Image (tube, rainbow, N blue to C red):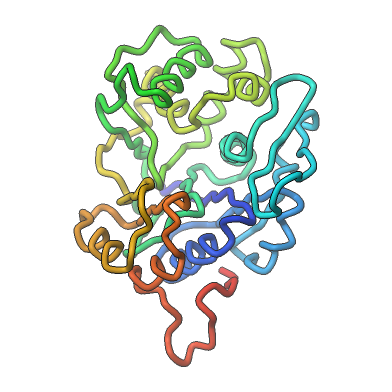
Length: 305
């Protein structure tokens, strides 16, 4: 029996155009999902409301965050990242909150499997997410022995995984579970949250806020790999669903098109980090998602699912 699959995308106003492109690519190319949950800060929700529809549901972060964690007033540009504060932990940034709401949404929403897709992705090929993620065993993506002990971020995140989950120290080079299009199982996420609480003596959101340097994907991967019961319910794969560009100089349309053309058949998505300053119009053109003559749509117009 196939497990129902939902998409989860956290976003914010600074990624609005990229999010519109992601939605367009989902509507044209992705099949087999029940709903697409979009989670944005409460004050950004009006900007995203027009994307909502029967299957795409826009939800505020306040639904998934503890009451003690609150957004600070915006002091910088309106399209800048927000900061959340509390009296229980150091302030956390928008990217921390996006990781927390992914975990909370996977625990709370009714589907059994979740495909996590950030808003700087675009689907470039047809993708049946139910066929990929709805089977008896959930896919667990990893890059084997990809994290060296001296990597400033990934190694610290890995060590913090061990502490948060109560595991023995991971040997380096360590496996990396971070990717652009990642699948989680609800029961595994719920057990992971309980494991964090058991190891730290804190609620799992508070433990993460006090840690600050963490990766939700590494936490999930480490938990599953160290749980015999949950590991048996997953099938590891080293085939990434996305080809990615992590920064550097902006890409032109030819460079983006070349990335797509050279992608493996299993790579159905393209992830271009917004920090690269590659224009959304360039990605849209290279991905074959430019507005088609006579369809009446502007390239970045919100479209309900």
